[in-house]
Image (cartoon, rainbow over all chains, first blue to last red; front, top):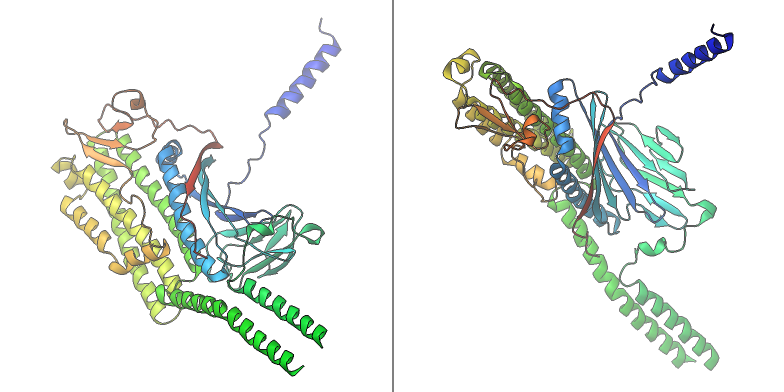
Length: 233
Length: 263
C-alpha cells in the first residue's frame, strides 16, 4: 500500500519537474549597433554588431560555414581594423590627438533565426581628457549617421555631464542614440568620480603644441628679468 | 633705470620672437593640414566612419549571399535542381544590378543638387562598390555552375552562359570609376584584401559541379576531398546544421595597424 506521504512526495517531484522544463523566454536577438566602451584613459573597445536573418536552412548552413571559417573571420577583423585606422587618422587630424586602432576580437553567434557577427577593435584616445572630464567628439561630430544605434559606455564611476544631442536612452552607465539620429556637432562629456581623473591617465595623451615649452621658458625669463630690474632699482 | 627698462624691452622682444617662431611654423603646419583635409576628398571623419560601417555590413550580407548560393548548389539533388538554383540566382543578379544603377543615378542627382554632401555621396558610393562586387561574384558563381549543366537544363531554366558573362562585365563597370574611387576614399586607400568569390565552384572531370565552401561541415570533411561538397545526384550534402542556439565562435586578433598621424 502506498502511503499518502509517498504520493505527496511524488506529486511534489512532478511539480518541480514541470517547473524545470517550463521554457524560459528566449532573449531577443541583438539589434545592429555600435558600442563604444570607454576606459578612464580615453581608450575604447569599439564593437560593431551586425545581424543577418537566417530565413532558410541554406542560409543557416551558410552562416555555420562562416562560423567555422576561422581564417575568414580573422580577415574580417583585420580589414575592419585597417579601415577604422583610416577613420582614426582623419579624426586625429581634426582633434590633433593621435589615435591607434588594433583588432581585438571577432565572434559569430546564432540566436534563433538570426546570425550575429561582432567585431571589436581597441581604439586609443578616442576620448580627450579635459581636466576632470572625458570628452568624445570625432569621429561622430561630422556627419556620422547610420541605420544602427550608437551606445557609449562610460568608465566605472563616471557620469555623463553633458551630451549633444541628448541621448534617446540613458542608464546603467550607458548612453544610447537611436538608429538614424543625425549626430552633427556630437559631444559627450563624462565627469570623473570625485572630480578628478586618476593619475597616469592624463599621461597617456599629449596634446601639447610645439612652442608651448618655449613660451613657458620665455615667460619665466621675463619674470626673472623683471625681478632683477626691480632689485637693481 | 632707463637702461634697465631698455634691456627689459629688448629681452621681451627677443623672447617673443623666439617663442613665436615655432608657434608660427606649427600654425602653418596645421593650417596646411586643414587645407589638405578640404582638398583631399571632401569627406568628413564622421561621414567616413558611417561609410566604413555601412560597407562592413554590406560585405557581410554579400558573403552570406555567396555562401548561401554555394550551399544551394551543393545540396541540389541533381542537375535539374541545380538549373533551377542558377536560373533563380541569375534573375537575382539582374535585379541587384538594376537597383544599383538606379541608386547610383539617385546619388549623383542628390549630390549635384546639394541634397547630400560630397562625403555622404562618397560613403554611399563605397557601399555601391561593395554591392556590385557581390553581384559580380554571384554572376561568376552562376556562370561556373552553368558550365556543368547540359543544354536541356539550361534551356528549361532560360539560362544563357554568354548573358551571365555579360552580367559580370556589367557589374564590374557599374557606376564607372567613381565607384572604385569612393571605395578607396572611404577605406583610406586600402582596398579589400581579397574581394573575389569566397565560394569556389567548378566542374569536375566527371562532369559534375563541385562546390568548395570554406568552413562548411559536411560528410566529405573526413574524406580526401576536404570540404568539397559534390552536387552529384547521389551525394547529398549534410550541412550539419542543428537547431542549437547561442552557438558562438571567437577569433582573437593581434592585427596591429599602422600608427596614426605624425604629431
